Image (tube, rainbow, N blue to C red; front, side, top):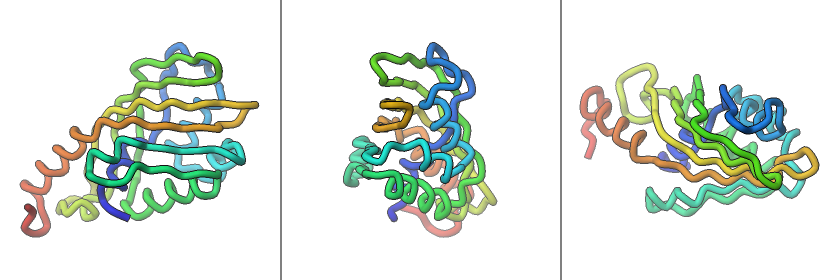
Length: 172
């Protein structure tokens, strides 16, 4: 898995601490909390059998957009990506949220703590900031769609700065 895909994943992980106008206890909120706690079995149980996850903004890294279908494939992607990168803490702050016709639109400020060595940084861990707009569709109480639109430049700039300061070896 490429580091740009992992970076994209980290910026998407998290939970919502204040859910704005979205109803407390909604399936979308519980789903995001399952991601934050990396409770993969809970996340999988909340996904519809025909669920879809996408992140078309991966093209920022000249990578293919992420597209996964089905609970096992979606959760497998998130699990392996977080394990590979040494993710140890995830947090979101909701800046705006609303629900309309079963779609939850959630604007998030994010911060993800990951292993420094994974990013060629000589520190036990580093913190990657970012912003995400998540659109989550809930159908019959299950998450049927999850689409992320991520602002990757904040995390990318943080990684580059840390590599210059604490790099394990020469970085371009």
